[in-house]
Length: 420
Image (cartoon, rainbow, N blue to C red; front, side, top):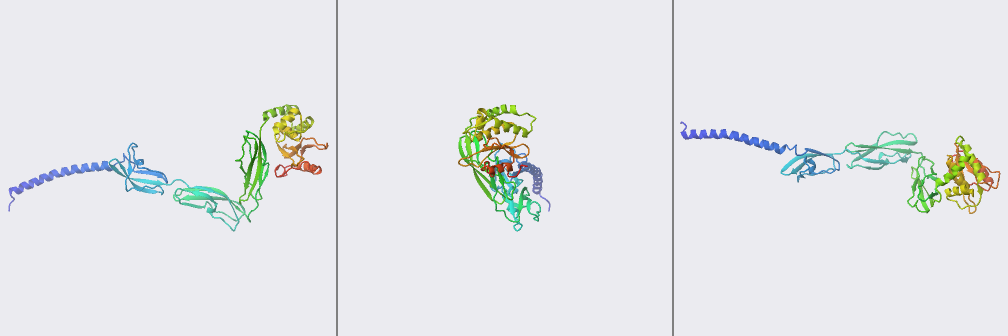
C-alpha cells in the first residue's frame, strides 16, 4: 500500500525538526560547557589548597585570591588544625561554592629540657628520667637516647636525649649521668666573704670572694637571693646564699650587706695615693719592690692613734693619707689605696673579732701567690708584717696571743696552700 500525501508531509516536518534540533542542542551543550568551565574553573578566584601549621588558625577568606571578597565555610565543612593531614573544605563566596583542600602540616620540633642525674650501676636510668620538661603541639612525643651508652666506668657519662614527634621533627639535648659507686649525702660548703660593705648608690657583686666546695662536684655555682637588699638606702640587709650539688644536697648561708653613705670618692682618695706613689716607686720596679716601698712608706709616715673609720675604707684611706695618723683600719685602708694604684693585686683580711680586740690587714699577690701584708706597727718591734707566708704569720700569731687568728671559712686565700 502506498504512502499518502499526509504521511509524506509529516515525514518532511520530522526531518526538518530533527535538523533544527541538532544545532540547537549543540549550542546548548556549548553554553553549558562554557558555563560549567567558568563555574568550576575558579583558579583565578581561589587557591585550590592552603597550608597551615599544626595548631594554627585558618579562615575561609584565606582561600580567596581577592582580599576584598568575603567567604565562609560550607555548613558541612569541619575545620581542625590539631592533627596533621589533608582535609576537603567547601568555600562559599558570593553566589559561588568552591571545593578546596586544607593541608595541616607539622614542621615544629618538640621543646625539650633535660637535667643531670646521679645513679649507681644498680639503677640505670631510662631516657625519660633525664627529661625535665617536654612539649609538642601534637601531644605525641617519643623520648629516647641519641646514641648507645656504656655504663662500664664510673664518672661523668655524656648523654644525648632525643624528643621526636609523630611528624618526625626532632630536638636533641645534651646532659650528664654521674655514675657513682654509692650515693653522695654530703652537702656542699659555702665559704668566703658573705658579709659586705657597700656605698649607697653603687653596685655590688654578691658572689665576689664567695666560694663553694663539694666532696664530689666541682662546678657548683652559688645562688644569691638579694631581694631584700636596697643599695640606695643606708642600712643592714640580709642576703641568702645557696648551693646545691648534683644529688640535691644543699647548703644555705646568710650574709649581711651593710649599705653606708659615701663621704669620699675613689677619685679623691686615689689622687692622694698617686701623690705618694710618685715619690716612692718607678715604672721599672718589680711588683715585690713596689710593695716593699709602700710598706716602708706607710710604716714611716703614718702615726698610730685611735680612729672611728672602721667600715668605710675610702674614709679610712683618705683620713690616713690626709692626716697621716690612725689605727689599724687606717693603716690597712691606706695600704689598700696605695697597692691598688700601684697595680698590685690585694684583698682585705681581718682577725676574728672579740669584745676587746679587732685588727685589719692586707694580703697581696706579687706573682708568687698570696702573702700577708700588715703595716700596722706592733709593740713587738721585731715583727715585720711584709710578705709573710700564711705559715710564717700563723707561727707568729700562735706565739702572740693569736694576734692574726682569722676565719678561714671567710678568708679562703690560703686554703689551697698557694704560698710557696
